[in-house]
Amino acid sequence: MESLTEFITSLNGIVWGPLMLALILGTGLYLSIGLAFRPIRRIADGFRLLWKGRSDNQFEGEISPFSALMTSLSATIGTGNIAGVATAIFMGGPGALFWMWIAALLGMATKYAEAVLAVNYRETDENGDHVGGPMFYIKNGLSKKWHFLGFLFALFAAIAGFGIGNTIQANSVADALHNSFAIPEWVTGVVLAVLVALVLLGGIRRIAQLASKIVPFMAITYLAAGLFIILTQITEVPAAIALIIESAFTPVSAAGGFVGATVWAAMQFGIARGIFSNEAGLGSAPIAHAAAKTNSPVEQGSIAMMGTFIDTIIICSITGLVIVLSGSYTSGEGGATLSVLAFATLLPGFGEYVVTFGLIIFAFTTIVGWSFYGEKSIYFLLGQRAILPFRILWILVIPLGSVVDLKFIWLLADTLNALMAIPNLIAILLLSPVVFSLTKKYMK
Image 1 (tube, helix red, strand yellow):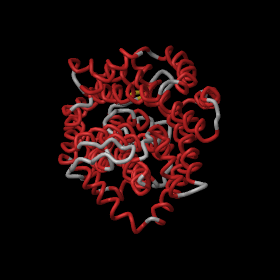
Image 2 (cartoon, helix red, strand yellow):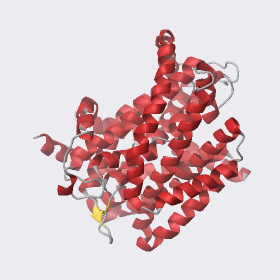
Image 3 (cartoon, one colour):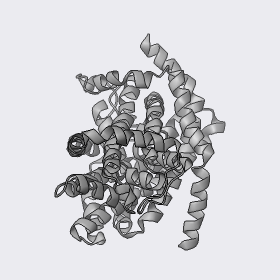
């Protein structure tokens, strides 16, 4: 196990090195410029399209555009918003939150492009359902010499799902419940597995129904508690924001249990955890958006980009600000425990349970949402016959993830994220003229 950890650590240092960060931010910046910063300028339009009323029967697809966004958010709003933000600040200092913001603002253009391509190049499977995502827009949009990228993406996504979307979620929930209520980790794992199994039997429509009901509720509840804390500390907020910005460009010295952080650490962990949370560039969200009832790739792209805005600019910012305001990042705690400590410090008697409850719901919906991503990746690689064995394996791994070492799981998830992002980002850059052309045609 020790040698495996060392190998993954070395690989992680390579795949999350300067070239990877440049690829992620560079792709987002290139797309933002090519789109004349339309994703940032048209945030209001994204919300308008999201709530636009219409009869979905006249459009191709299985789920409504709103349900597609909720399904993608169910997979992205997870432990990354609670444990991931805390880990970024613990490892990179308060400045990590600033780099999460930058990655998210540029990532909106990336998420927009992913969804545009997913809808434009989607296919229909044997059951008559629409399937899409990076592997399909690589297959249908690029020449054969690039098709290996689609295979690599599907392979990495299928494997990565067991990290980012399964074991790490179960692990964080089990850890939080054990610390708060002394519930054995294996018990949490078994209960989660049973609940997930009940949902997976219904396929994408059942997943979308669950996401459309539970995601708005959980997000509003968590945000309400976080905003209440911030309002009670409103006089300290300007200083906290100043600290975040200052720490993004200057090293932070050690204090208490905090070992200190360089500017590079702030950038590296801020961007890595930001991508882990909002998944812009990973290529996961467009798999859900490809099933949307829509005939307009651009409209669905405008809805999809709101996922990054909601996930990082709103929810991650709430978590990060509470941690910085509480000063608990110097306690020596990390992960979900740090977020619990921060909320409990500024909201005594109640804050701990808000985070624990939020973590449980966030993680559960992420496990369900990511099962769909992994399923479609397996379908691309092995066909329809492989879906049932995949679902069974997905459920069986949940209890295992609840008792595995958290540090190794985070490390593995980070590495796998980068490996699936690389072929997707290359494909987006190659297909960017299609994104620009479809957008211009829509605007006219």
